[in-house]
Length: 300
Image (tube, rainbow, N blue to C red):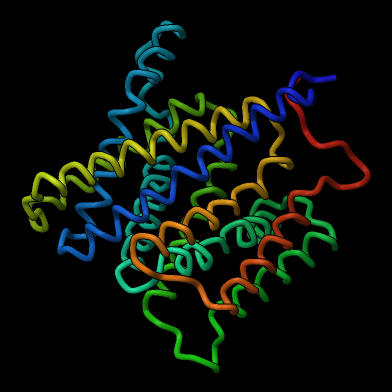
């Protein structure tokens, strides 16, 4: 039996994952407050990436020291990693932009189209094996998005399209991550992505920079720190438990997002959003469930 298959390690992995899902919605709260108060969205995205790079730098340096080469901090496939950074920056910008007009829970519900798109494009582009059951889950997921957006019943807002675009961009980011998987460590890759994105966005700062107030400085720093902390918890979760167990737990982020949106902004999703999220969760559970003819992958 693998180490990660033990009940104790699964519980540790679940605890790390739930900790991440409780933490990450605070990013959206700060981003929504900052965007609504006039801080440019590009500046908020830059803060998220820059603080992320600085947070992961000590861990990346430690890994490089253990490997005996600081050169491991520099990505070998620079153009691939630059594209990854562009997709992550784009997803961040689009999602933070959507928060200016959408409640957090609504934006997050639409954003959760990403696992469905990853599965569909993984089959079409990477030629990954997707059986009839998972194609059915993909179709079910798109039904969930239609229920949330309700095209033809209500006008689809610009915020909804921005959140949808963010989900598509992040799906492409994950797809590219699968393609380059197996190279550097997860921490090194996370540092590299944040570093490249921060450097690129820094080039835009002279044209958009708005001097933040002390409170806004604190929120910008907290936003980046929470993002780094949340992603670190996710990495630790996958060290202890299998992806098929952890993937559906990502939807628990909706609970915290709904609570924070209600407490901070007095926003609460309508019945259609809850129904659509329920359909998306069902689709995610089908996608995460291992195929009956093989055991889920595990760490030896």
